[in-house]
Length: 400
Ligand SMILES: Cc1cc2nc3c(=O)[nH]c(=O)nc-3n(C[C@H](O)[C@H](O)[C@H](O)COP(=O)(O)OP(=O)(O)OC[C@H]3O[C@@H](n4cnc5c(N)ncnc54)[C@H](O)[C@@H]3O)c2cc1C
Image (cartoon, rainbow, N blue to C red):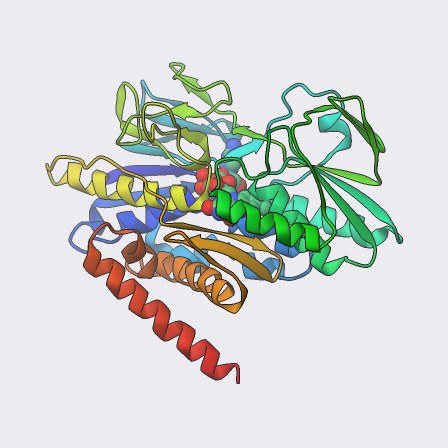
């Protein structure tokens, strides 16, 4: 049996494990071990909905056993490092585990860029636990809460959307973004639509003004403006999780592990890095986006390639093209598909459909709509579109 160690049970880790189990003839040839500091899989891109009380913790986190049953071994341990020379991983309590393949999918943590006071005074927002801490803080505060969200990427903007829905009566939100616009690198038509939504909901947006310092109850901007606040929340940047390796491997300035077009770590053909922790070359100028939809598709490709290698076949390069994007802003969401903006109930149905089917595809060991939707073959895409139409129609009929 080939031992596969999957480090991290987020989108990338769990989807790669599920897809390694797709091939019935082959699944008994792998012993898959998953390691995570938490005993559950969390839908990180939905934690703002928990803060806003729109979803319960149980709707966005799933015990690993419920998803994977006895098909994998799960170790609830902190991963400290990987020794590529000896094919071993090292976890807390100095435990060591051997592998034939290792998949590093530990995600990312906050990056503070050395900004004074950011770590000390801004509330972190990078896990389900952070989401619950933030919810309690806001609930405990009285009227007129002035919130500064430091960073206008997907995390900050979705949090602003959800908070202004639930706590409309008592909070005023300002998003501060260092770059010239919020949601850098997102489709400009989609960004315009999201900005209109935020303005209608009284969210102030300050752009082109990097934060110089975060203080206990204010934020100092580059143009020396001081924004007084009750609470500041840090969503301004992320870096790859720390992991010690022997030998040292190449990483970007933001601590992401450099990989080739097969997501392999240079020099180690049995070692892969996936998701937010990986720096995958999209083209000669761009690295992979740190998005769940990228993590999931990269994971499928790596699982298929490991199976291909074991069958003595050539591996297939991974190509990433974004078919569409959706940003959840509380109960509402706004998205774009093939250049067309979608809003309202249709957008909500697409979002629910994607999440329900993502979980179903994991439970079904990589077989399902999430995989079909990401396949390049037209037939698979038509089949997943049909499933979407049927599921949407039945939701509309049952909501009457
Ligand atoms: C509020 C918010 C909104 C977002 N919105 C979107 C969106 O609209 N669309 C989109 O595509 N993406 C969105 N994202 C980004 C998306 O969630 C990430 O890109 C995705 O989670 C990356 O998946 P991953 O598997 O690489 O990492 P993660 O999902 O972060 O999983 C990493 C796992 O590793 C574990 N771990 C970390 N360190 C250790 C350690 N040392 N030992 C053991 N276990 C460890 C963690 O517990 C976790 O389970 C959003 C993120 C946030 C926070």
